[in-house]
Amino acid sequence: MRRALAVLTALLLVSCDDELTEPRPQSELLEAPTAVTVGAQSLVLEPYVYRDFMPGAAPPGGSAMIAGIRVRATNGAALPRSFRADSVWVIAGPQQVWAAPLAEHRFDDAPPYTYESVARDGPKWAPGTPIDVVVRVRDGSGPPQLLRAPNEVVRQTW
Picture (cartoon, rainbow, N blue to C red):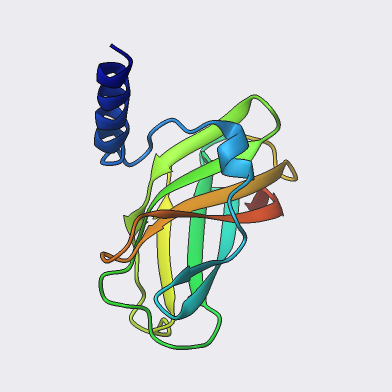
């Protein structure tokens, strides 16, 4: 019986990996490293999480939160073509976690050692709210990894 339960649990965990924003314990997210190695490259996360308050462009009270992320190879070498960041978790305090899939958003003029993506329609947390940002990265040849940027804040644009 124990073995059957262990096999069932393993199968559920494997199937959950296909979900882009599977629930993750907050402790697991906050323990994610601030740099990971993919192939021979060390990667870091550079997020920009904000709400738009531009008069005439944003709705009254400001937009929903937007998470722009940049994953950067610290050695300046091009990221593999198979590299992806597919999910983001934004953590504010012990009870608030926003999980969202990331949509690839590469700019033509972005350097080849960066990967940029965005998630939209987040909560309306106040500008200045302290946050940690975690993304799940994949390169096609290894298991997915979590990558964290601690001590960020929700910003506001005008």
